[in-house]
Length: 143
Length: 273
Image 1 (cartoon, each protein chain N blue to C red):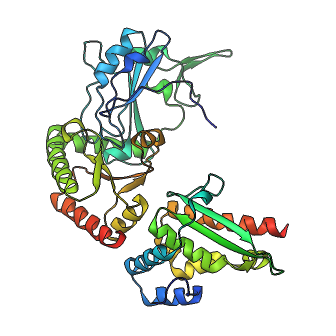
Image 2: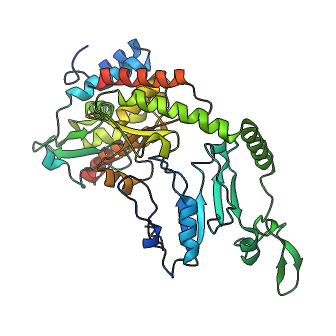
Image 3: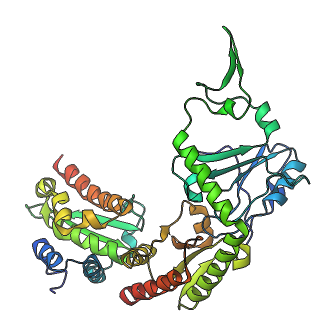
């Protein structure tokens, strides 16, 4: 398995397809979660907290200075599987422009990963909260 | 934001709640208390709280949703410790969803006005007023959930047929077994009073492990636990934890299933630590 840092979302989907078992897929998410760099504690504030999640989740977005104006995401959680899910979101969204983020069909990606089947309603709501945060940032940038 | 008009009953350090005299003052109208904590399992001394409430002229309402599948509460004690109102939910007593029980002492129900109008709750309608039917019909406006009520009756018959003493003894043994096994896991901490002072639930945390991760991996092994703050954020604040995992046992669980839980926890720890 390639490391999360170098993997693309298509490679992850392929890997999830090979591992038909949710237990094995979950282990990949845990490994990805382990590799996600920790967010500096000073960034973990009430403002950066993503609500609607069962575990603590923080997300910070910054916009690149160059003319591309891409959105870079940093995120963290105290739960390893959630950190894995955050890595998925970063894979999909980070380094993209606001327009690209706006045009991304994230539901289709989650569905290809099988997350729509394996996550409970509460966890899906949490994931929805993380996605909403990114989409809101993108919309604000476009406005 | 919703704010309640009431105040809370203080909780003692050993997780019991019997210092109701602090809040049962002359102005107190109603003392509402759970019979069993949904997190700690603590069995509250509802009759003692009732006597204190009655001493200042207050009524008591006991939320028995948690304790009903595990133990009986006698609402009639005859010594001032009777329970004025008691509520429980159908699905926790192995009955259907969408139905529950609100018990009230007959003389209190007679004095009370209905909160809702509808069919079946009047004895006579006049042009300018109505006379209410006798309780409980007075409080059962409209079409009652007939199917659920019949199924609820069957569930009650079933549990009574098994016998609460049998259920209690079996679950108490299961709880002692589970507690001993769980406590043997390094870093695992169970919250609440000792087994003999609580219902058959174990809420716990494991050092360095997120409750959400733990619950996820237990789920993969076919073990269903509740995790999170269980709607009791003030309690979790007091315990200085953000969440806990709760394993709940009922009469249909077995010692083998406790072993399975322990194996599943070990499986999760291998992956998470």
